[in-house]
Length: 258
Image 1 (cartoon, one colour):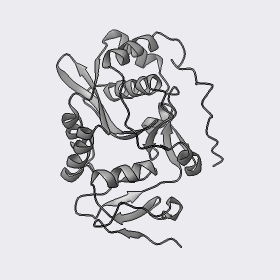
Image 2 (cartoon, rainbow, N blue to C red):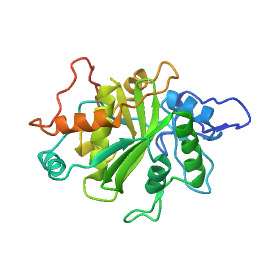
Image 3 (tube, rainbow, N blue to C red):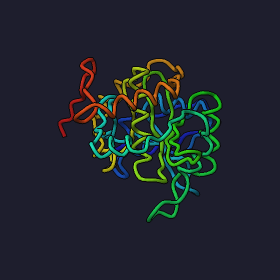
Image 4 (cartoon, rainbow, N blue to C red):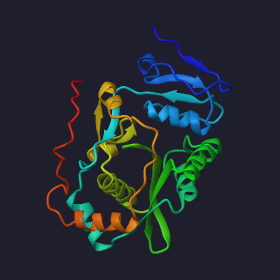
């Protein structure tokens, strides 16, 4: 039976094989280590992410199955297209990252708070300063009404959290991420674990083996497209009938036999 590994923060960043993650709690792989940039980048390159509560040691996870979006497969409903056409928001990228992660940290309905601690905010803001962490912001006039953030490494965007202060704001942020991913020819958007809301928008669960085949080969930063290009792509997309997307034939769909 796999045993939980303890990671020494004083040593070089390293993680056990992901198939050693626990069945209970499902996906827990290791504890300890550090939230320094090299530890985080080493983790994401292997499909591992930190997730823990205040007062706990750093906990590292590699769940099976994995929740993902394949770029170009988000379900764009008629109601969402209508809402966009009636009152188009403005999308920006990487303009107010600290405000986005702080908004994601704020308490939500039926939740006293989130897992995003001050330590996590500091670590991901440092990754943003270094060019690894990115934010997408949704604006209505001068009000920040929604957004998301995550880590971008060579062909993959690892989504971390999102927030919404008005109806559809987080969906608009996801739509912007889809368009940015298509413009940059990304392979995958990682959503980590199953979520009903994301599933309704087209995210699906895949096997860990398939997921790990899509992971970065090189530690290379993503360059997000110009925000004007993203806004123009969204405006074109909402005019398309049906779901708004056609799957890219070059993408090999994952096989999930569960």
